[in-house]
Image 1 (cartoon, rainbow, N blue to C red):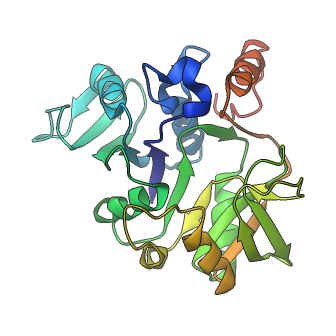
Image 2: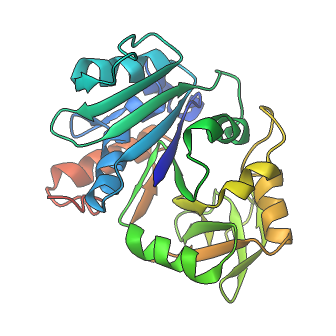
Amino acid sequence: MKVGILAGGLGTRLAEETETKPKPMVEIGGKPILWHIMKHYHHFGFKSFVIALGYKGSRIKRFFGDNNVQNDPGNEDIAGDRVTVKSIGREDWVVELVDTGQDTETGGRIKRMKPHLDGGTFMLTYGDGVSSVNLPELLAFHRSHGRMATVTAVRPPPRFGKLDIRGDAVVSFSEKPKLEEEWINGAFFVLEPEVLDYIDGDDVQWEKEPLERLAKDGQLMAYRHEAFWQCMDTLQDKNLLQDLWEQGTPPWKVWE
């Protein structure tokens, strides 16, 4: 199963770090947060990644180019618009790096991933958030309800997408409400390929019309995750994650 990672945003709220690098390359414990996210998926057996590049995507290409052991034959040019890396360091990863345009919105980036997703169920997350989500349990929940989309619902500070949940169904979706709410969009999606039909083009934000329409159509379900989740929107968030790493038992480090 493919895992899509959105790694093309500007990261303006973390400008102290992102003037010279994309946010997924900001380091926690000496490794990019993107690496931490991929280690999480790999721990649970998911090792085929499609990474949507945009702002300063060359830095992400360089990371994989510098660290990869074996490039896929015919894709050795790390400067191209698509690079397949068969392994990275000691990790048994297959990574496709896909340029999706610097100004493309999140929905457009997902749509541009379509040729690389093999036409089946796929996972999706953002390249700036870590969690302790049990991914096999998330996938089992998705398969149990038979809808097109599952979003992981979490309970952090109230500055993300509000989920109105009845039973396990998301009946409405509102991105970044002003008032504190109980459940928010924690990413770590499981999606059927039909969700791509909800995205019309590059200027579509995944967090707006597509998720709103999926909820309205009864096709968006919520997997409740009560344990650790943290995004890295600001320098304060980055410092929090770094402090947790330095304490020796970061709660998202599910791998050995």
